[in-house]
Length: 139
Image 1 (cartoon, rainbow, N blue to C red):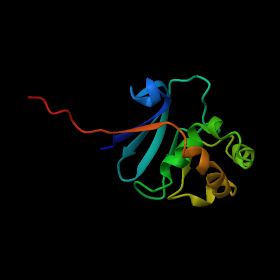
Image 2: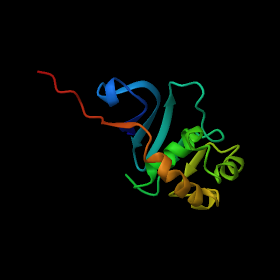
Image 3: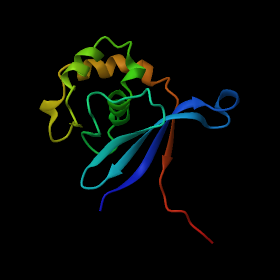
């Protein structure tokens, strides 16, 4: 049965230099696990919209090093407006519901690899928190 194992939270740094965690929360990227791993987004900032009609991405493999970067580009492209390749990718994905880097790599826009490299420096400075979901132990 499929379920979520991890959440990435994107937003502002709460308190002095982020000492109070994340505030405000702009978006969450959920990592789901089943026969294959997938990522999907939930939004708290109504100005954030995915590329096309994307609802999920499937990385090349579980915990692939670029899966979070790819998810951020796919679900929060507004953060990467300065990237020259974004418009080509946006045009190619206008009707896309899912990106599957594993089973359908030929459906990934040709400009994605270039966009990924352009987005890397921006991604490195985004405020992102990670939470691994584990059952709460009650005493």
